[in-house]
Image (cartoon, rainbow over the protein chains, first blue to last red):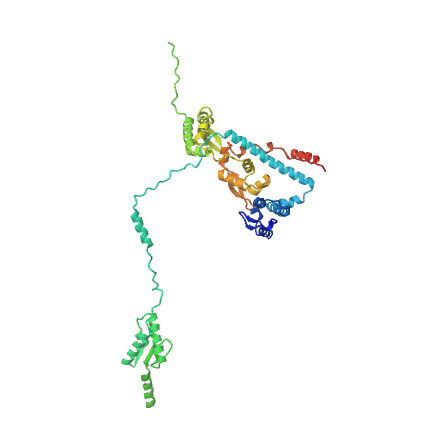
Length: 253
Length: 202
């Protein structure tokens, strides 16, 4: 059975999965090739071949083509500018460029040789290394500590804090019924009263609730409300008193 | 009996000798080379006085005379152990920074020393191979360090450290041999290439 190159399982730093998935990710430019260690792929393939114990020429050929293409892609990705630069070179210029690069590398090699000689000369010379403290460090002296105190302090922190009170956030309404009763009892004693006088000294909310109680009583036809002009005192009277009054007026008319 | 004049040891303190003593004290405390400016500031004298006094210190602490040797290295002055004492020192102390530097590491180091600050892709271009592992190894040894970023691509650029100069015994990077003196020139390589090409069967 042939080694299925495309199904070769890979476990690389940058990628884990089958070879064909790696190929498609690279081609879709979702995986930068420069992060992929191609040598690891070759090793994985060679190991797979070794496991089989027989040489599969078809698989080797396919693998060589694929890995060759990847290598070329990677090389182009690493040196994008020079790729364009080199492809336009004439053979003569290319030779010149090659010679220039070899000279550059040769210089690096020679410089490395110089460093190697220096190192050999000084290999046995010792000197002090490492950061010296430039200023004295201040040592903080602590009084002897008692672990129990620390435990006690931590225990205090571990106690669940009391639930925060939201009392200040809610508006406290006195029940409307309370004022309904108050007005009723007032009207049992008197036939009429002045609203502003009665609510004098109450809070705004209480005045509002007191007024709501008035509206409630009016709805049930228990009272009559009168105001001679806007912002004038509101007069409240018993509904039957009003009726009897108008009745009287009617009679006298 | 003829009296020979006694040679008296002068007890008169010369200012230079005094500065020299102070410099010795500073250098023995320091763990890295001290530049002349730092020595002058610490000793509260001017740079010329320091240079004069350093000559006295250098004479006193010279190879063959003392177990301690003064050297001008990495942009400053520092004491090191004498070469005679190397065996004794190596029985007690390791030299991890330069131990087992490979050829690849030395080439990379040379490129950084000559062309730095230089980025990894630039080093890779010259050496023709991936240098990621070599570069991080040199960073770990403290021989090179990050020094800014590439303007165009934002790649990290590397330069050599004072430790590099110290280990290789360089007063500064300017003490490296001139690049022109190193290796064949382009024309020479070109001739050799052409010679090889001619031998190839068409």
